[in-house]
Structures are given as C-alpha cells and as structure tokens.
Amino acid sequence: MSINRLKEMIQESQNIVFFGGAGVSTESNIPDFRSETGLYTTSKNTQYPPEYMLSYTCFLKDTEDFYEFYKTKMIYKDAKPNDAHLVLADLESRGKLKAVITQNIDGLHQMAGSKNVLELHGSVHRNYCTKCNKFFSLDFILNSPSIPKCSQCGGIVKPDVVLYEEGLNMYILDKAVKYIEKADMLIVGGTSLRVYPAAGLIEYYKGNKLVLINKSDTPYDRRAALIFNESIGNVLRKST
View 1 (tube, one colour):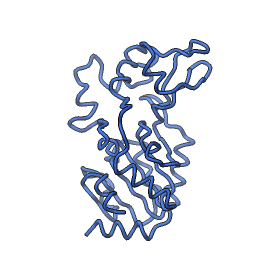
View 2 (cartoon, one colour):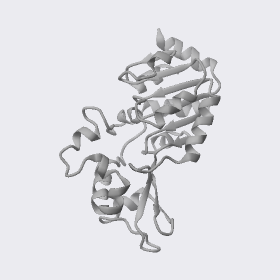
View 3 (cartoon, one colour):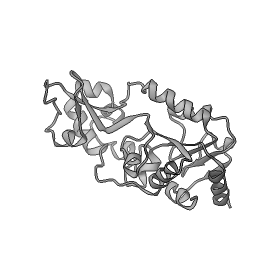
C-alpha cells in the first residue's frame, strides 16, 4: 500500500520539508480560493471581483471596502488546527521535519506547535501601521470600526499579508528555496501547484522522495514518488 511506503519514507528521512497550500486549511473549515465552495466562486456577486478586493490598489483607494471584505472573508479566528497541522508539528518535535513552508495566512501551523514556519503570504496575526510601523494584533483589526487606525500616530494599519500587486518577501522565499534544496524528502499538500511564483519552489527539490497530497492532480504528478488524491489530514494521520 502507498501509505505503508509513505511511512517507510518518513522513517528513512531526517531532513523533511513540507510545502502546503489552501487545502491544508480547508479541513479546518477555512475556504480555499478556486474550488466550487472557494472564495472566488462564492464572492462573484460582490460589486468587485475578489482579486480587486484583495489588491493593494483596493487597500489604498477603497480602504473601507477592503477591510469589510478582508474581515468577513479572510479571517477565521475560531478555526483550529486539524490532523495535518498536528502531525507536522509532531514530526518537527521528533527532529524529522525541518521546515513548514506555507501559502496560508491563518497561523494554524504555529497554533498546532510548529516552530519553523515560513509564511510566503504573511499572516493575519501581524498588522503594522503604514506610517510608524507599530505592531497591532488580529484582535485590534477585528475590534476596529471600519478602517483600523494607529493608536500612536493615526496612520492606517495594514495586515502583514501579501496582496495582489505586491511581491513575496524575498528573504522568506530565499529561505524556503534553501530548505527545499537540502531536503531529503519533500511533502507537498493542499496545493494544485499552478500559481507562481510559489509553485515554482518545487523545482529546487532534487531528491527522489517527492510526495504529493492533493484532491486534484498537479503539473508535477509525473515527478512524484507517491501521489494521494485524498484528505491530507487522513493521509498524514495514517503515516505516523
């Protein structure tokens, strides 16, 4: 069985890296973007498309609309880590998993106990004043009426998340590349690997233990040692 081979690969490996996308968080009831129940599908009736509502232009020009959309569609404060998050945290505590690279902004990996988490798209839990750079918590954003303003200088507070029209943090991206290059096993889960530049990270893995866990196929299936088209939480739970 494939699950038995996955167990063997994890046992043999001492430098595992996990790279995950929105599908990791859907099992914690956080919608993804492009599925039938995803954000892009369910938000089609809004005045503007989600791509605009989550753009830097919208943040600058229609800040109140941006925050209304952001607070109602992007923040799931009551979400809890699922089996995938918990297994990955356990693998890290055992010294096998060296890094979690995630496209998610929900902070669930850290909530589960993971320490070395590289957040390619930032986090809803970090927010900064655009004028003085003062830090603000998620609760501050949620409890602010309309547009969150800095208590120190009055500047607008921006979530530390990568919006459309913004580039990825190159320091985080470079660290992700280095971890993947050194990995003896790469587990990729909950991502279709179709959105760049993040999807291109897989190109840096040169080993022979690539595992893909995603409900649909990916452009990299032919390169994988193992493929699981099912729940990532179930697969990882059975693997340990």
